[in-house]
Length: 197
Image (cartoon, rainbow, N blue to C red):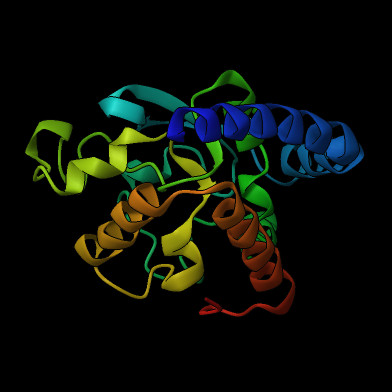
């Protein structure tokens, strides 16, 4: 039964992302042009992330920071939106979560899903082999553009606490839950609500 639900999920992911890209194409082009005009560097930011079963893949985002930002300041950490590595356009994109839109390409490729645990860095907070067996459950499904942890706590709790929500999602997965998380994500973006679940 779960395999059927996962098959339906993949179909929904593929066509949902494809339709999303087609509808949003004008916006994506405008954002790309503005980023290029605003600061030096590529339009897209690529970064290695851990996916299903610990497979490493490149996640795509609109670039919101200066070139080589990870080698400056606080490195991989962005403690607040006043970080001077974030470009002026980047602040707007991040506040509206528009920087995440290129991940629709990741979904079409099959590296990600629309809903699932957010993909961590391969080396932070742990390497794949270092995750406790219970926490490794989160890697049984494709990572998502949004997820249960995002609509429940976002970044307000430590990583290990967020993982408990990821494991909860994997164990309780259903098409209805995905639909609910997508609606809650849209609601949080539109109304700037941090905790909405």
